[in-house]
Length: 242
Image: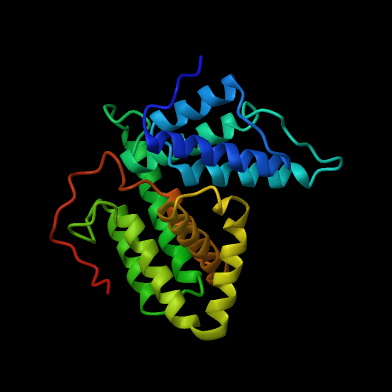
């Protein structure tokens, strides 16, 4: 059973989902008690608002392209996709679905292989140099259980930011403005329902996604935070990222 939101932040979260759901349904609406309870669970479990809204919009776009189009009437339809996205985010942050568990050697090798494959994909991409070589080398270091970025809580996210920064600098001018407009259009369906800081983060993610597609590097967010089960990361390895 749904409860009253406990804080202003929770109310803003609920209202943002409600407004976005209404836009996707193409009609103003008030969440049912069941859907309100779902949204409160998402908030209280720590699911970021931008992840919830992006997942909703992405799923509805796919459904609207079907013939005949399907427009779900309840958030129960999108709940599995949102929970899957949340689980993937938690796994990337913690390095494992069960932080207390340990991975066997074959799993650690599979994770190392994922980092090596990402490094090779970055090398084959059109990402600007020297960022391309620097990021590929850092991913190889992570595959070996070494820390290429001492002091970074999330080295993988830092590597993604390095590529995005280099891509923005390489484009510049009208080309960059075009990509920024495309990113703004991606966020437009749910931007009005967001607080300014949340909307800014969503725009940054949309811009990164557009640049990633244009330059062809892999989605590093699909990698874990660091390879779980590896020896503790030392501080003797540096990649020279600028």
